[in-house]
Length: 197
Length: 139
Image 1: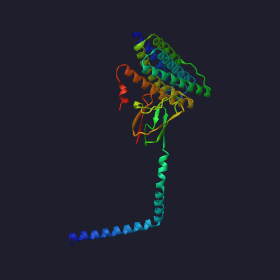
Image 2: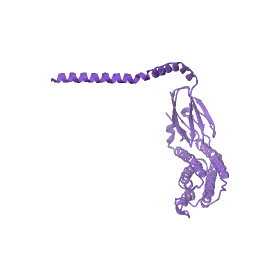
Image 3: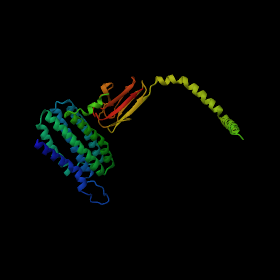
Image 4: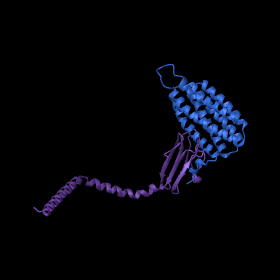
């Protein structure tokens, strides 16, 4: 259990870079004295692509391993929705002529993802479901924060900015959905109450 | 002068004023009377047209946009059609509690039609994103 906690800390650190980058690095030009990072649009596209790709990977592992209906349905949704986001982000990047450019944040994310995947490949049964869903909750929480606080304010191109704004509700609803399943896995029936009349 | 007399005088004055005001109002209305007559006739003519309106029920649209049903509560008359239009880049559903209606997957940029025939209140969700919630009221 200790190494799982350590992995989570690693992931958190990697993801926190998304937010931290905005705070620690001030833009060189004083003209844009906002709290946005040194990230350019090419960096932002790379971050979105890595973050999306990781969630698709996690979902595919869950579809291959989990036997829990709610977890499987959620995983399928992550694969479907994030694949749609990937496609639309790719189309937009091509249209704007932006080539994804790796940076510390995207690299940190990818490194954190490798560790999560190792763990997902190792665990089984209920322990797998719990780890997958717990990670989905914290992952989406951090992605929501990063998109809201770093990527949207940092985007230079108006179309990229509005695409990120458009994607935000998707990340938020995934986060809420993951929390709903997390509650049901831990025995609290939670949101199931609302399905009744 | 006794208080009784005062009251009577006040009453007479009041009546007089009322009569003058009434006459003035009647005079003002006179030029408009023909218009009012036409309007009344039109209303009477419109009445027989009502059954044809019933024969073509209304269609109401619910937009599925930014992971929300818009409007969140829609009230329609029994027999009306509800059209859900998915404007997001991912598929959604409109699924009523107890599956009293269920669109199944509505792909991006596609839509789904439902004839709301039975009165009642139908809370529904997107089965893919269950925290998306809305309500259809059929009267």
